[in-house]
Image (cartoon, rainbow, N blue to C red; front, top):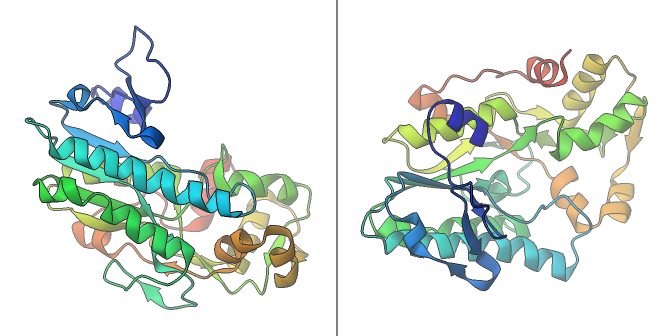
Length: 284
């Protein structure tokens, strides 16, 4: 995102947790301590907040769940309150959320108007979005991209899948009927740019491609792109034993999300279909 914006002529100041280098415009902050000098944000045009503890790394112990929640709520609240108190406020605050907001919903089609689900991730997502209220109350346009599974060979879910799939050990998870709502990395960057400059966009927007797929469809498509068999399978009980609550929420839950607001606003996806997105990302 930084590379994309700077190549278009914008100046990007990063919020960093270490001391900024002298040759940068970086701004130091420590959200876990509630430390941020709001004067460093005076006069910026927009703020994009994507930070948060990785939900897919390791089992969800009580400490891990606390880190997932606190890293999102505390940082968003700190930024939101700082922006609300500025004399020269930004025009827009883009504060990330996630499709975890909807929870496990089987094959129910979900739009931004759908109710939130129940459980840990939906509760975190609701608090996460609510933490931006001070900025919204101060008249700043607030956008919450509810981000789906981002397809990138450099990290995230796809990067973790590549090694077993390339070895011919890829396969469906559980019964394979659970829906995966995904988006290409390029399209996610495009969604964030779209949200920056479209003044009619506010509130939650589903940052997902318009064609969600089941886990079985995803498995077969990735195997076809890599030219590898996908006969292996991980049964539900194994997912629960190996990954615990994290596996239940991220691997077995079904969330069929569509980008209704983006489509209504005329956003054009570069990769609306899974196979094209995978071939583009993997150079196939």
